[in-house]
Length: 288
Image (cartoon, rainbow, N blue to C red; front, side):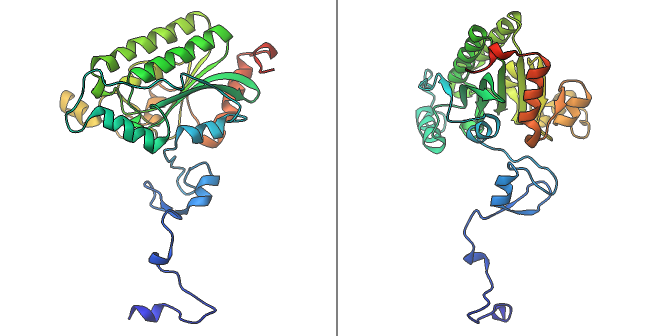
């Protein structure tokens, strides 16, 4: 009976699901619209129907924000995590690291580089949620610290794009110490009158939120990004009350004053350039 709905002539052929290559169509998790993957890519991975911002990789952010993603100086490129606790609860931490490196092609959950945005030399770090949930371990803390040190020495703006599930429990207290370490470096940068723009994407949670991510001079967020410290269920159980509608979403935090602006992904680069100009980064801050 199914054959009634399929044309058998040479001129007209009906394409079935099994005839379609995997990954050509993507279903929006928010509005359920089915989107052609090439169109989604052209639209910077934003749903044309409901403006849902899909999670993207650090490299895709670099491609979107930097004038020339190949013309960069990478900070701490070869730093790698070790297994100080010999963590082996479900699987070896060393095996998890190896698998994450093979999957992403990166050494850890953040890439820190110096590049140009609108011609302005900028120190920029971008977290990658695909690397063990963007968890913050000792390498993430060290790379951010080195990036901030570069920004201080070279008087460049500092940008960090956060996407994290929190601290990396496989490193125990080593990971928790990164909260203090990164916060101290951001405080030092602020004392030197540097400009720190923090960009919160989906999700930004746990120790990342409790440290550098919420310490920006200007805090931007992508639409509907999940932002918070503990999970909503834990908070509800702790306080014994129902949570407000949209709790821990970017729009709620904007309304409560924790976020300065919500910026559509297509406007993000131009917004950063406008901020640089507003704060009067003169030609001596430009790449020559």
